[in-house]
Amino acid sequence: MIEIKHLTKTYGDAEGAPRALDDVSLKIADGDIMGIIGMSGAGKSTLVRCINLLERPTSGQIIVDGQDVTGLSGTALRSYRRRVAMIFQSFGLLSQKSVLSNVCFPFLAATGRVTAQNRERALELLDMVGLREKASSYPSQLSGGQQQRVAIARALACDPEYILCDEATSALDPASTNTILKLLRDINRKTGVTVIVITHSMGVVEKICHNVAVLEHGRVVEQGSVADVFANPQSNAAQVLLERVDWDA
Amino acid sequence: MLEYLNEFVAEYGELLLEGTGATLVMLAVPTIISYVIGLALGVVLYLTAPGSLRPHPKLNAVLGWVVNICRSFPFIVLMVSIIPVTRTIMGTSSGILGTIPPLVLSTSPFIARMVEQSLAEVPRASVEAVEACGASTPRIVFSALLPEALPSIVRGVAVTLIAVLGYTAIAGAVGAGGLGDIAIRYGYYRYQTEVMVAAIIILVVVVQVIQSVCDIIARKVDHRSQG
Image (cartoon, rainbow over all chains, first blue to last red; front, side, top):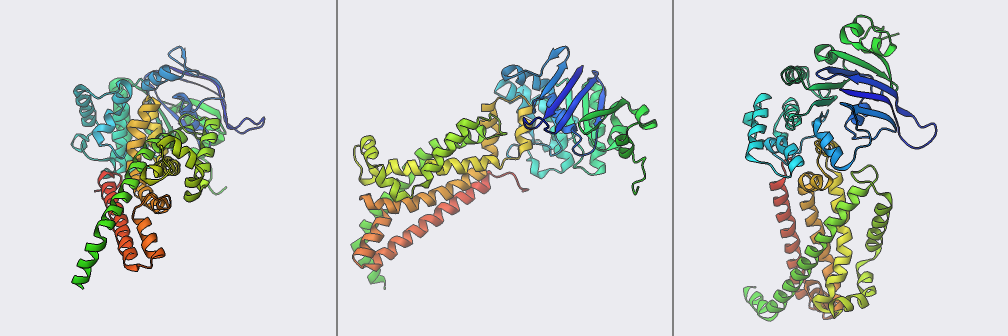
């Protein structure tokens, strides 16, 4: 379980510096698919990047399975990051490495080498995302949707407990989006991995999320089960995201 | 015409061959040494920059200054101003040996900036993705950043070599020899235009070869575009 407690992130030291995150508290249960939704600039990317400490929160705590990870550094931070995989909007594949080498990278990061067993596992994962035959291709030879599937295979390589998806489908067409979402849902069902989905699309939330938190100006303005929030959106942000307000008003 | 060429080669062939050899040595040795220093310096400049993987504003600023100061010297001024240092290190301040310290001193910071720039071109998301995999900073540098930047670094090698080739002509001023020295001595001081033209032709060919070879290698190692 991930518990986010009173998380605040400001850029710059000035007293009145704008707060990207303002006292955010959230609980994400194991096995959940949690959506974090908001407009551009609402702070949702900052939030997810604080979870794996790509960004350091200014104050507050992130507690994972009872352990406060906020202050981790060095080896402890690196081994924590292996438990929390991440998928990016722009895929983040290494363009100079083959698809197989990309999927093997977490092994390299963890142990300093890639064994035959690791490669076997990577091929299994590529099989799972339907790209085994592309193992020796380079990312530039793949479509966006295929690249994101490779990124998912890479994310799964270290058997993570959590997968963070930062706008993972925002750069993809609807067909590829569906493929990626189905894949994430199936992985969640099969392995019980917790998935945290950052998006500005209610469609994505509706399709795969169980719970959702709505972020506006760095604050959580609404949270609950997807069914509840969709049936009865309270916040203005949720209403706009659900297109329940007159667009021309 | 053919006869004239034969005569010319008989008279100046050896001189030009020796000059070419001297130029290539002055080109290769300092450039190799400078790449060892420049790559390390470039990586440190990249890593310590604000917002990078290991931000260290003070170290970054100091290194930046040192690099900028070395790069502010026109090569000929640098060369004569460090003659005492050169003499201490190499035992001489003239000849090919005498050119190595000034060439290294002016080329290393040049390479450092080129490498820094090549690394900065690696997409942020790729770096963050390997960081998010739990890779250590050395692992990120050697297994992700440098391989990703390789095509750009190889293209930088061509720019560097051609710049150093320009410096070697100036280095001729300390009696280091080489093609630039020949072109100036024969063409400018002795009005033997044909020797100068021959030296220039060889220099042009060397530049073309450097550029073409680097382009071919860069294309070979570049997997970023489709194909």
